[in-house]
Image 1 (tube, helix red, strand yellow):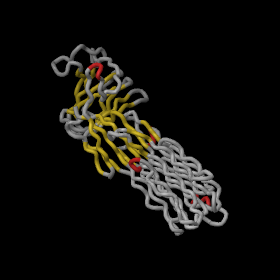
Image 2 (cartoon, helix red, strand yellow; image 1 turned 180 degrees about the horizontal axis):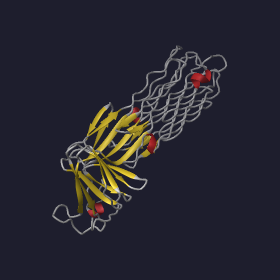
Image 3 (cartoon, helix red, strand yellow; image 1 turned 45 degrees about the horizontal axis):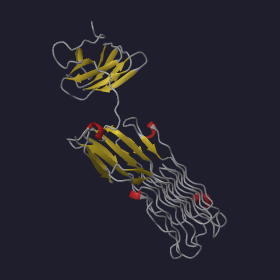
Image 4 (cartoon, one colour; image 1 turned 180 degrees about the vertical axis):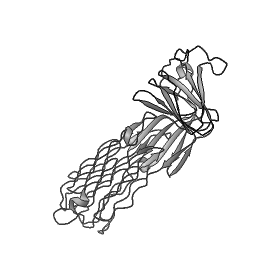
Length: 386
C-alpha cells in the first residue's frame, strides 16, 4: 500500500486525524489470516460491530497478540495479521501517529506551586470474597493493596516444656495506577483454624485481586521437647508460607516465599512486593528455657527465641491507602513456656488490621490448649473520581 509506512499528517476521507486507514477484511469464518505487512509502531484494529475478538501481528519468529477495539504498540515488523472474531464481522486496521511525551510524577497528588489540586479519592476495604465494581464515574486507574491471611500459631501443652512459634504474616502486594474497568473478582484469604495442642499451625489462605495474588503466612511450630516427647521437629518446626512461621522450642523456623511477576505479581500497575521473610528459630528445649521463634512478617524476619522471652514477630508493611497508616502482614510473637504455672503468654493480634499471625500461647490453667489463628486477608482499593 503506497504511503503505508510513511504516515501522513492526517487520514484521508475524514475520521480521526492521527489514524491512517490501511484496509478492512470480512470475517467469512471466525479465524482468518490476513497477508498484511507493516513496520513497528502503534496500530488500531477495530470490529465494525464492536464485538470482542483477538488479533495476532505475526513477524519473523515473533508474534504479538492484542484484543480488538483498542490501540496497541507493536514493537516489531510483521508480515500478516491472524484474527479471531465473530463470523460476518468487518475488521479494520489503522496505523496511528502519536507525539512523544514525558512522565510526570505523582499524577493523583496536589501540587500547590502550580495550582494543581488532588483528584478526590475513596477507599474500598474488601474483607470477604466477591467482586470489586469500579464506579461508573471513576477513573480507570486504581491503587490496590493485597494482603494474604496470617498463619496460625503453634499449639501448646499444659506442662509447657517448650514454647510455641508465632504465625507468619501474609505477603503484601501493592499496585499503583493499575488499569481496572467494570468488575474485578476478589478472593480474600481465610485464616486457618486453631491448631491442636502440641501441633504446628496451618498456613493462611492466599488473597486474589483478579489474577494478582499475595500468599498467606506459614503456621508457627507447636510445642516441642525432643528429649521426652515424640512430636519433636515433626511438629515443632515452623510452616513455610508467604512469610515463615516461627519454630517451637529447639526447632527450625518456616521459610518465606518471595513472589515475582510469574508467581502472582503480574506486570501491570508497577507491582511492589513486601514479604518473603523467614520466622525465628526456637530456643533449646527444657522445662524453663525453651522460648519459641517469632513468625516472619511482610517487613522483616521473625527473631529467635531468647533466654528470657519468646521471639518477636517480624514487622509488617505500613500503608496509608485506607486514609491512615495501617500495618499489613506482621508476624506473630513466639511464646515462652509457662513452667507449669498456667500463666501462658498473652494472646494478641499480630498488628493493626490483624493480617499477621497472632501470638501463640500455651498453657492456660495447666491444661492443653490450641494456638490462636491469624488474621484474614484483605484487599483495599483506592479509586479516583475527577
